[in-house]
Image (cartoon, rainbow, N blue to C red; front, side, top):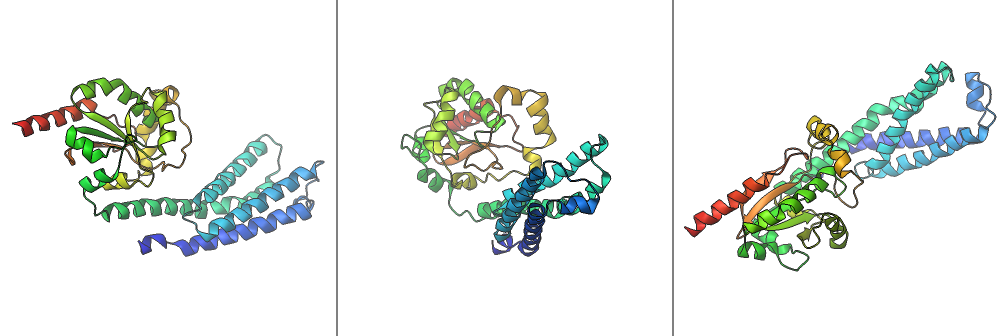
Length: 326
């Protein structure tokens, strides 16, 4: 755990400290002496020099942000992401106006020091931040010592029933959701509503596991006519990790298969997408059939767009039930 938390942090801190100081001093020079850079480039001073000074103010603000990220690059990666987006879009904007003949090529020299040279180090910081969380997630799963029955006894539905108690009365289909802003999570909620009666007719009880507080999650359930569905709030992801559900890799969340399903098959237009709130957007979903505190069957997604085989899972639990009765 110690190796993971300190992974490559020193060079990241150095990069962010340099980026912060550079952005603050460059922005200050624009605010204090706005004509300087135009004179240096041999360009005429624009009429609305105040707009140029506002860019300097923005640069100072980003510099402060980089210094904040310097304190903990792994935790403050969103600041680095915002900075990288700006540093990618700015040169693209320059090329657009250069090709239209509205900006001289000499302006590109400013893009080199302000934007282009930061692409690689900022990109590496973001990659390492992602890798850090992924490795940490794997370590947490490997260190989980609690057995399934303990985990099921600790987690209760909104009706104050533990999952273990429910599984001792009847089979449970335990469905772990991603975040509610996810297109495929919304599709899962729709499918649960559509298959609920059929699944319950087999004596199986559905329990949804999510990361939000109960009240907030219920708002989403109501949209899919699942107001009375049993659900468990697991914001700390203890139950997720106990069932060895990992954080997804980029290829599992934004892979070609997922993008094709999202766009070409129209899932995005049908179910929409929104931002996540207090949820881990990289958390992978899964479905487990549980009876008497034991896992009888399971389906763990290899990508977020995988279709859940509800009927096959229900048949597995019914077969197991028949065998136990015989």
